[in-house]
Length: 266
Length: 352
Image 1 (cartoon, chains in turn yellow, red):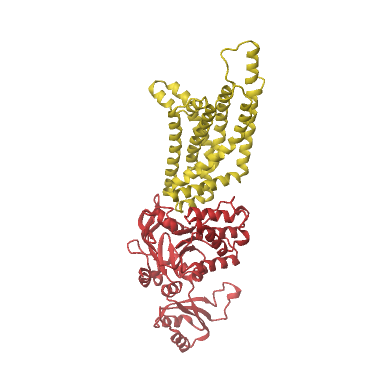
Image 2: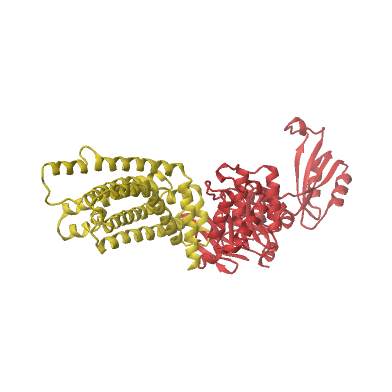
């Protein structure tokens, strides 16, 4: 057990090092910061922004029902971050295995006394850590805005919302990692991951199109439904279970596909 | 240390290796010699647990490579054809990473990495990013990676490919210095490399081991070792049969005659012939050959012993149409039914 943990740690550290040494990762992060910062300002301070709307409402003399501004803002902004992350995450996960395949380093991992599971878990933790690092400056922005809010934002809602974002990211990255393990083309991995994310994202629509109990069952698989629940501060253990299942599924498929890759490659 | 029995691997319908059997004793260096596509890499990948075999068994240090893959992987250092390197890491950082995933205890890591760096002459490059290293240095990092956890078994797939002559010598010396404590398999298609570094050779062709023995014995036993080259003046055809019938002579052929004019450099004086005789194993017919030639009234202008090189052996074993000549029939790849080793004496050596 200690050996497995130490292996996971080794893979994790190497993976992180790759991201922090890669200009590509910084470029992605920069674009993400730019876009999310832009929307942050627009949503809060823009001409149709929350503050302006509330100002107009106050002028019109409507005070009932009272509006929880931090809560409103957070749920709008987190939804937006979720959509942005949809573009970001496939780009983070695309190289996880395909790069290793292309560079031949998978042969090193596969001939080392490390299980496929340990490699997959280490990699997923690495890329998730990088994603959280990218999120930190944005959380900083929120902290500045919320510190000025009155009434103060509910800490639980904040925590739950961001936990939801991280869980959703873990689910997407895990599935993206599996797709990355299927090909040695990083671009193809990114495109396929993106397509799969789209599909999971709009499962809600598909489900309501189908209707009936089947539609309902499919609807439960939707990422967006569970994510928006969490981002609104609604804690539902089924959301946690769903995201955890996606993560596990991704890890399982990755380990299997690496094993299969070894069995069939010429 | 390494025992391979009836190992086969097919990709779809194409066999990559077929019924390979060999073993390597502790401390030996076994050279895998064969043309490209002969199945060297496949065999090595099976030994390292990277590929499963279709049938047959392979054991490393007593552990089956398939059943006990993790135990085997712990005991093997492997340098694939392309060194597996994370180019964004420094040499030292990379070796620390490899030491970690190979299960070197935390307290020993610094020592092991230091040793590997010193052995592979990487001291002045230890803090350089691998991305910035030349091919030769990358190859050395690849080697360092294979020995960093001090494995009992080291498998090197073409370790000297792409290096300059100076580096090749360094790498060969390194490999030789590793023997003894370590059991090494290396593959190559460079013939001198095998005779210089390996204690035993397995010649592999089209997925079959066609011979295993020490380099010297291979040369001796496979083509009867030595022969003679003669330059004679006179009617060679008249004496050819008598030479052929001498005890200890395996074959006689005219290599050049005055009538054939291949090029100016090989031009012979009139009525001169160049002849090659191949001796039978263990026999030296030198005296009788000279007596026969002179006794027949021919002029003997030159006579020298020729040693068969590993190159000759290799070509003979891997040549497609070798079976056309009955004299070399025993060097042919064997039929699937009988096993690998030709000639017979080599089999005995291998079972040891």
